[in-house]
Picture 1: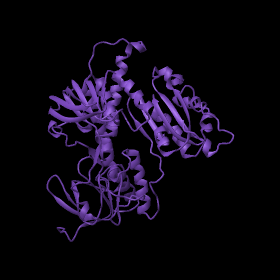
Picture 2 (picture 1 turned 90 degrees about the horizontal axis):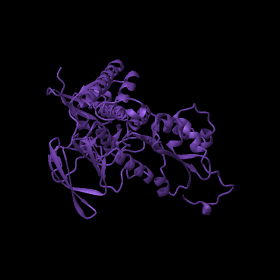
Picture 3 (picture 1 turned 45 degrees about the vertical axis):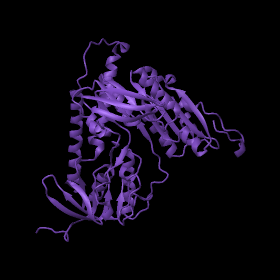
Picture 4 (picture 1 turned 90 degrees about the vertical axis):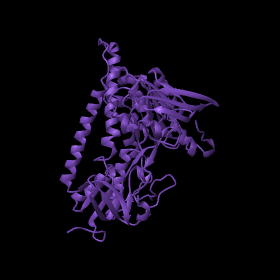
Length: 479
C-alpha cells in the first residue's frame, strides 16, 4: 500500500546524518531491539572516514614518507631524483576509504539499522521527508530523533572568492596533480596540515592568516615553533593579513589582494585552498517546522544533555556546537544514548583532547598557559625540549617541546601540551592520569620502557617545582 503524509513510516529512532554519533546510536540501539534508521545525503559513515580525519591523515602520512626519502642521506640511504606521484598518493587514500565504507555497510546490515540514502528535511515535528537520487520520496517519523548533520568549510563573501572555485579539504584530497603554487587561506589545524603535506609533495606553498600568528588560540611558544618549522620547510607564512579581493580560478591562476599593516599586498598562485572556519549544515533542513532553534551562528541550540528545543529531539556532533573532533562526536553518542534510555548524562566538564597532525604533531589536553591566565588559574610550569628525550634522538626527530601545568595547591595536572614526535600518543598517557585524578608524581615515578617517547614524561615531571610549605591566596603569583 502506498503511504501518504498521514501514514509515515514509523521508527523508534530516526537519525538525520550518519556521522560518528548518529551511526553509533543507530547500530547500538538497533542491536538492543529498537527499530532505527539513518538518513544520509552522500557520505556513508559521515565525513571522518570519507573526506576528513582518516583520509587526510592517510595523505599526510604519504607526505611524511616523502620527507624521509628526501632526508635519505641523513639515514645513510642514497636517493635519486624521483618525483612524487600524487595520483598514487590519492589512490592509496581511496582504497582505504572504500574499505571503510564497506565496513560501515556491513555494520548497518549486522546491526539491523536501516541506512536510507537521500536528502532529508523536516516537514513536521519529528517527521523527515527523504528524497533519493532517483526521485523517490519517503516520509519517516521517529519516536526519538537525532540531528547529526555536521559542518562544512566556510567560503565567505569576499569579492571574487566564491567565483574562484577554491579548494576545500574535500577537493584537496582528490587532486590529480601537485599544485605548482598553493595559497592556503587560514592558519588553523586544517590549513597547516595541508600546507605542510603539499609542500612535501613538491608544491610551493603560502599560508595567509588574518590573525597575528598561526593557531592563534594556542600559546605563543606553540605558534612560534610552528612558524619556525614552516620556514625551515620553505613554506611562506603571511599573518595579520585581511583578504579584500580574489581574482582568477583555482587550478589555473589566482590572485589574492589583501591588506597588511595598512598596505596593499598581492599574492599569486595556481591553486587556492580555503581553510578558514566551519559552517553548520543546518540551513534548508526544515528545523523551523520541527521546533528546533539555532544560535545566531547557525548551530543547533542544545542543553548539557544535548536536547534541542523540541521534545524528544537531540543534536550531536559539530552541528550542535560540540568541539569539532570526531572523538567528541563519539562522546556525544554516549550522552544521547544514555539519555534516550532514561539516564542523565551531560557534556559539561568533559576533557577535550586534540591533536594536529603536522609533522611533528601538536597535541594538548586540559588548560594551556593562555587559558590558565585568562581564567586566573595559578600553576607551576614544567617544560623540556624533545631533544633530551632519548627516543626522539634515535629517530632524529628532536624538534619541539613538551610542557605541563601543575596546580599550585596540589600535585594535580591541569594541562599538558606536546609539540614533537608522537605527541598525540604521549598526551594520551597524561590524559589517563588526569582522568584518574593522579598527581604528577605518579608519572614521574613510573617505570616507562626505554627508549620510548613516553619515557620523556619522567624528565618532564622531574622538573616541577615543589609545593611551598604554605601558600596564601595573596602569595600565589602567575608565571
